[in-house]
Length: 378
Image 1 (cartoon, rainbow, N blue to C red):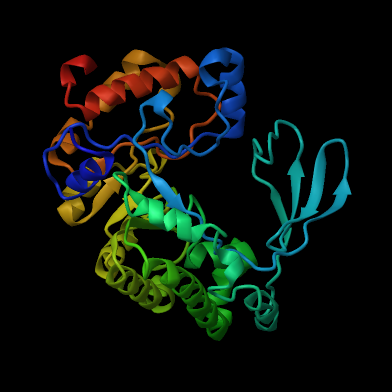
Image 2: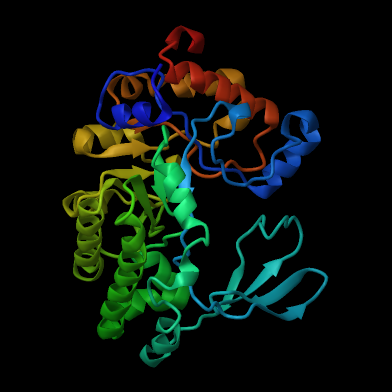
């Protein structure tokens, strides 16, 4: 019987081994709370918002190398104002937000925060932030990294560099520091600052990763880069080409030279017009293929071919509709499952309108899909 690692590589290389890998991203904390009410015995041991490979759900195992790519030291979180309805806080990134209390669980909100101020408003502000983005500090690595690497060398499952949303990308980090509106002007008003930011991020991720990659190969790395909305990217292809592309291409080249088999990009919304540049830079996979943005893995496969692997593409909006709707939706993926280079997952974390029963229906039907038991989807 093939291992999780063998099935993952075979799928990525368009082999025929079944079942295909069974991966998922995670769930909202509000969803976990709902499931605890609906099926307390089934989820009593769940302590996660991210999926790591829980046997109870039939997910394949993956391991993640825990590296801290964030600010060291972080800004000191501070509660600035509190009412019955909301809190105003400065977070570890130096960003001040106003957040509604209602419906929040474990820091997870039911609505987006209102962003009030950011640590970078003008070029000279970046020097303070830059001092917190020094690569390869000892604090960026777990103290037992040697022991973990020794164990990973014997693995039979995929090893991933960085945990979920650990390595935020070029646009993502700039938006965190400046806000979407200010960043949209900064490409034009402060090009020197933006070139400096992009170079700083590249150095942080590359040089922080290098000491680990020189000691062990990994199956993939994900650069988290939410830079699109439903209507397309939040920056033009020309801006992407000038400011981000050279650093992305260098990062991919360095990582693959250090034994990273696949380089993936996680980006929501519709990044279609940027995909040719991602592929030119050497990116192997893009996910989660957010269906509310009117894109699909089927369309991307026709347009970009087998050079681009696809992860995601399961419309989260279908899951609340019940068993038959879920089965009908999964039948759409049969050609991609047969071809390979595709791992179906929910196109983001699972929201709280998905009941435990419907999620179990989805997982059961997806296991049949991944095993090639297409008759079970009828």
